[in-house]
Image 1 (cartoon, one colour):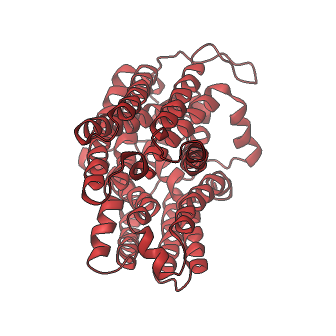
Image 2 (cartoon, rainbow, N blue to C red):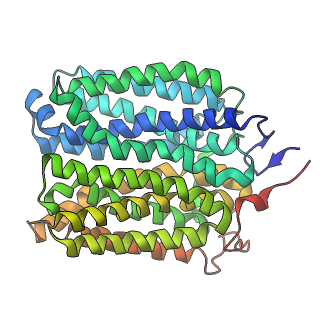
Image 3 (cartoon, rainbow, N blue to C red):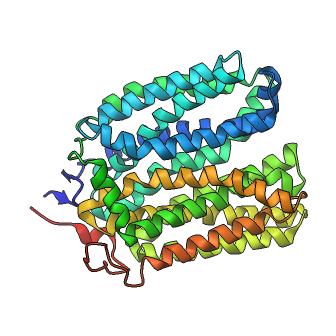
Length: 415
């Protein structure tokens, strides 16, 4: 029996363990890309001092990194459409490793920033390919679980990269965690080639065809929701020291608490989405995200209240991402691979938006106490955008909208 979903036709794995190993490999690759994105947050002053720069300039490389991924992901998806996913992922990881190595040994800020750009180009190719590959090797009824497992790599990176890089650098240099990411990336290359073989290339799709998917409001709305929810999360995460007033150990505890619960949220969201559908699960967790950010605002600088708020916020924010991806995969099965290829663009556009939003907020509120309020507003807009995709909107071509509670399992077809 084969499963057909408009992306590829696959045979279900004969071994659940083998399938889990393949998911885990994809997750670890995304963990490395995500770690490199967030790791510098924990060592920004050290990098700035060593490269005769400023923490502000070093911080802007986070935005540059995110923008390059957002812009290049769809371009590379088109350019690499004739290449097998296995080859594309291995090549992308190789480029990423080179960029990480360049930045790790950089003697100047310019070289450091250039290494970040090279690594981002590798990440731009790897993220959507790995996400699509996770879906392609999985029977449709398990897609939610696959997205959760693969996505947990990015979640773990958010949870541990900044505090871990800070701890490692404290005993050596900021270059050590950077080199560590590069070494782990190089070690992952042969694992990808071994475990992720025979993942077929997508049918070639032109840039015009990919862009045409953005004329479908049912695809645009979850993408917009992804960008807004991502912006809300990264605004809170990146500038948590500003509005909490905590530094060092206390701040690390708050971020670690949020990160651990993000892993929990990511883990439970997949099965819940498979069972209850993306509309219900996505809506519930996005609303919970908003409420948690409001609670953080009212907690002020009380550590216990902040810790509870951070835990709920971390869980809800990452639990919301799985149903958003699930919606992209199921809204129009024949174009599912095209829709999901835009997810990383939307997510990293949100990451890039966060520092710009923070600058606007801090201009009006130098103390930064209203940062969680701004994050809650962005996330609430994300909820509205997600909901708009379920109110009978139609494609530009006039095709009727899909049922709001369609689950992945509904795409199964025996042959």
